[in-house]
Amino acid sequence: MDLLPRVSAGPQPFSVSSSQHWEGNDERWSTTIIRGQETWVPLPEGCSTSDPPDCSNLRGVQDYQNQPSNGFKTNQSTTWESINFYKLELEDILNYTGNGQYGFETIGLELQNSSGPTLTHQVVAGFVTKDFKFGIFDLGPKPTNFSDFNDPQPSFLWSLHNQSIIPSLSYGYSAGTAYVGEGVGASVVLGGYDALRLDSNNLTIPLGPDDSRSLLMGLQSIQANNTLQGTTSLLSQGIFTFIDSTVPEIWLPIPECKAFETAFGLYLDNSTDRYLVNDTVHSQLLQLNPSITFKLGAEVYGGSSIDIVLPYAAFDLVANYPIYPTATNYFPLWRAANASQYTIGRTFLQESYLVVDYERSDFTVAQAVFPPNATQKIIHILPLEPPKSHQQPTHLHRTKLVSIVLACITFLLALLLFGYFVFKRQKKLKQRESRDGNLKQTITRYWH
Image (cartoon, rainbow, N blue to C red):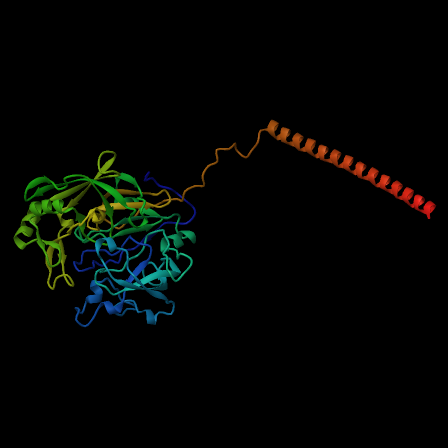
């Protein structure tokens, strides 16, 4: 993708302000989720009396009308239109389960009464399951299909573009980091990207054929430096993997996970399937400050590629409730059961920037950068131009124009001449019929 300014006097890209809160069971995420075709919000029933008092805060629920809220209350919304209950299928492949209470609702970006766009009659799912910690804001272009409706229901991004609020079906995204300075919030730009949040070196990859897993790329190698084993390779062969911000972990084959175990002194907690780091090893890793380099391409071998470097700080996470009752150091690595589960989660998106262009069916990945202030440089991504015709231009050469005029005149003269002969022939026939009729009458009189 040519990441150059694209100026337009039409619809402008919209930059979504981050919540300025670091949320989740590890308090590390600037919450915006980029996957799916519909918006998900936690329901009050997701927090019970057995949960901690700050349960709703841990799930990313913000205050409503300056009062604490424990989730989206459908019965108190005057714009809620219930549809039905359906299974939440977004992460079936990764064994995340739950049901959603689906309906139509008004969705606005940023705080109420802010300058953010607001759309009515958008698909929303309220959920209770703790498999999903946060709400999900959809950035997919495809509609949602319900068995209760004949017509597919459009996504939020498609509606923004269809109503000329943003210039194209595209977005720029980076997850932000809590460990750089006082924290750098997520970057979400609809219809464009923030040129100050990504390095100029980038790689563009065609979108995958599966709409639900279109951000598919080749992971060609993983190399770690300054580990407990020094410099080491952590990927035995290239694999295809999927970028997914819904989950924090990196999902890799079991042999690769074992290589990580050795390099970083990890041990597997069989009760939660998470990799933990004891205090001694954690102190060593902080001192060594390892880095991990992901080499990415469109294919698993060869072709253009890009290196995305992550510091150990990106993997230095702490799990709290509901995973563990107390703060526990863990490493966001997960053992994939098969190739369909190979996933690069939002840990990776702390240090990378995505530009997804549905108009051109490709996405661009680059190393994220963190400017020292909050300035932005928002760049348009324009829609595809109508396909250019290979026919001659609409303006005609004078000689061709004269030829066309003469041909038209000749055709009209021929038509008039043909009409004249037809008229004359019909007139003669009528005269003959008239004479024959008179003769018949004369003969009849003579014979009677």
